Image (tube, rainbow, N blue to C red; front, top):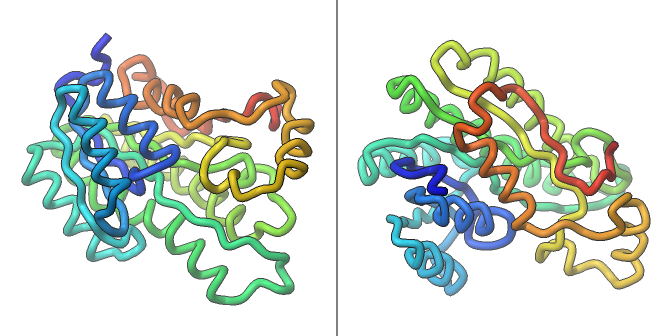
Length: 248
């Protein structure tokens, strides 16, 4: 359908998992892709090749999304290389789980910086570009944990709840400039993070989900496509749950 033809998307942390799935989905709809991750490696090379197979432009940018200056330098380089930025996907994220009373300051700071500060950094850097275009879609990955909380994940839940507050504030601040901001709250998604769980743990999660299964990165990417395209032209400031009914 080429829903994103002649558009450029910047996606953070897109070498694998949900970010990679979003990049590929966008590319399949005609979108040029700029994406970031910490370092260039075999995963990045494969992701670039898979995106190029759709006949669109792709460029990788190495850098720390949690670093304010690095994020701004990346955005300026993307603007120079592609000429515009129509879509920003704040996807970079990590977990460092632990019970609150056993959680170190380093665990807290690392997760808040990578998950929440990176979203601020890239939104702050991309906003002037989108404002000059009088159009743009900012999509940030939150989580059902950011809505309901979860024992052993106070840092992760706080970072993802912060994403929701950031998204709603950005939608109100930038809406008059034609910029939309929305968040996606995935539930139990089958990625490298969840692969580390035991079979029993996965089954326990699945029993909590009305659809009785984990979701796939591609299913999250479909929601991200909706929010990036004109199909959602009057949708802003919203949190769309992609969780199989887990938070219904």
